[in-house]
Length: 78
Ligand SMILES: [Zn+2]
Image 1 (cartoon, rainbow, N blue to C red):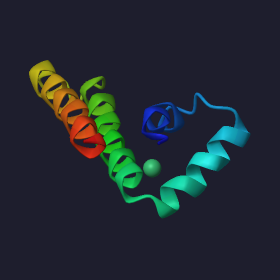
Image 2: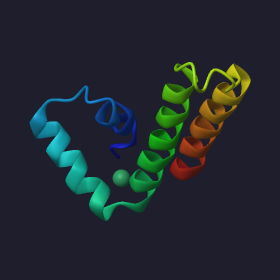
Image 3: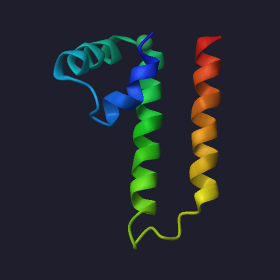
């Protein structure tokens, strides 16, 4: 139910009360935990791609993972 907010949560775009509620929810909700883990991996990859060290990470890979994330989100909801 809070899957929509997982990305915002990981990006620290939520106020502390909402963040606290999501943190508590993720602790007990496996689909949301999965989602959080995928987004964390994706963010790490994107961050690495933005540094000189990770300049070799192809944009196509990043978009493929993004696609996978959205596909997964649909599967979990179905
Ligand atoms: Zn959930």
